Amino acid sequence: MAEFRLNRTNDAVFKAVFEKHPEITLSLINAFLEYQGTEQIADIEMIDREIDGELPEDKETRLDILGKTKAGEKVNIEMQVNNLTSMAERIVYYWARNFTDLKKGEDYDQLARTISINILAYNMLDEKKSPDMHSCFEIVDRKTECRLTDKLEIHILELKKLKPQSVREMNRVEKWAAYFSQKTPEKELEEIAETDQGIQAAMEVDDMFTKDEKARRVYELAEKARRDRMSMINCAERRGREEGLAEGRESMIINMLKANLPTEQVANIAKESMEYITALQKKYQAEGIL
Image 1: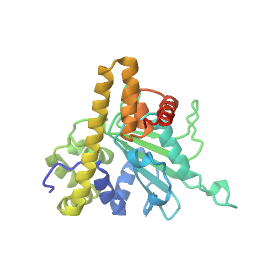
Image 2: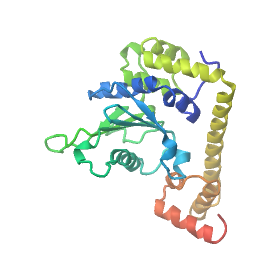
Image 3: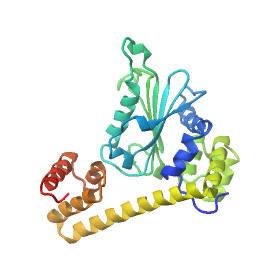
Image 4: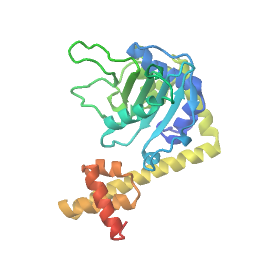
């Protein structure tokens, strides 16, 4: 087993386990589909995301992998540790980008089933309205609950809603959530691995990862960057509070922009609109402050 407590939401770990091992990725995907009762998939081929041309700030905030089956179905898995504004809209936007890829001359019925799986380290949905850890969204009629199409399927897994329970009572999604959660004791993870081949394979990759010096270095740098970012955020927030509410909030925002935080993340932390943050950014860029 691993010699230290591994953060499995770390960029380097996530890619090492899921991007390089399609069979493990397939096990994770089917855990979601099995629990929801939707059609399982039998194969997956990983797609290189480097050619997507993502927005620069997405490289700081999005960690995702995209796979495609032989039948043309697409599955996007995103790990999100930062609580960003408009996350629901982001999820739908990226689902739509993956869905709308008709080529010239193709008909709409050739659009493939597109599945979005979003693993969040925080609670996005209201806990009173949506207490369950795993939610699945489709387009349905409010009155009859008739589904408009089977091509859209959006899963959200909120790790903070994971409740303590015995391994024998867990379903497959809950086992994967326990795998990702940093609160799960290693002894419990070993017990879970004995009951799930996909998680067992993932933990074997984890073990090899921790023994690879180069991989460990990449991991540690990613962890340091995350800690530095959080420290900078906390420092900016404290400084903002100390300097007074109105002026302090603006100062806090400028400090975060100077640290090259994505504007969406700045808006979320400052609890301001994207329009306000963008306008402030342009103003201080014109003045040469940014």
